[in-house]
Image (cartoon, one colour):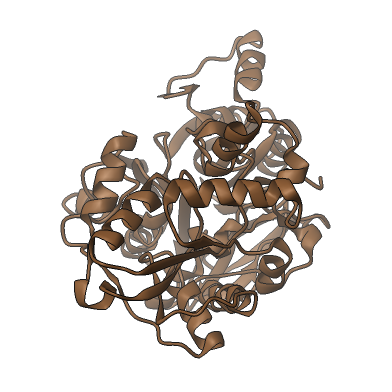
Length: 467
């Protein structure tokens, strides 16, 4: 998905920028970049993160960066920030989101005799495409609103200019942008996690489509937020870091509520509840507290040399890394009936491998409780499941096995309580090899988040997009 951080200060901002951007490393997979502006102009750096962390890549060259304002990003695919020379002035830009009509907008630009200098796996770098659209406006505010009008999907952004740093949230608020404040400085962040240890307090949650310009002395709202919002529910289920808050709602507490909801709907008798670390831990704690049964760690995550299972681009390598970093505890598994919580089941392959290991270690029963409903629809708005076809999703594979086609009766399969829904769950259960499988109810997930349903995007579970 990606995440960004930007700051402007009365003193040098590089340390805050470096650590603030690093606090978004859980959101991106391939590229990290920073840009600062000073009296000499812009200084930019971009590194590949597939073999190492953002922090280690930039540490040796920090002394080359100097300035009172800057932006940084951890990106899924494209190289960022982009630096642009335009009639609006020179500016640097980072973006988070997904441009569904990327090819259409590229063709439009080429018809206008525009050219692109940055490339990505898709051809045109999406952030440069956004920069081109901004430059079609007479002001930065007009340019950003032009992006909102033209882009299908989602796009939040930070723009670094000589006048300050612009923060702009996607027009439907699918991704968060939060403004932080401390003495003599302001910062924009995708995650409030980045604020605490840098001395910032969350000052303002930007609304959908809202545009704010921050300087070292204060901030000014350049565009009021829209009324309609569709923030991604997966931020609370999986993507978000436990410390973070979106719309004032803490991720960790939401996951406790998700786990408690799973427990209330469950009557299985087990010895204890465990989790697939780390994404299932908070859900399992919530389940344990609600059920009043022990929480134990049947798996321990080995992180020193296996930090991120999603980093390698090859799926077989990702699966290998995922298995290698989880080490089972035989004495906690042998002869036990265990409920396992996790954030979700996407493909089902990793879960099948993990279950096989548990049975090898002598588990009597394995009951799996994902904290969200069955994933049936690929994400249209963010980069979650971007590289996967629908048939990579466990739900769609089950539907094809049952129907001979992957896209028949999708509404029935997405509706709990129908015969087709139960058939799909049973098919997935058999494939991953567990004793029982019971998914979270969508209504319970929405209640755990605590926002009105119409403000939360649930497309990957029910196929609906309200706006």
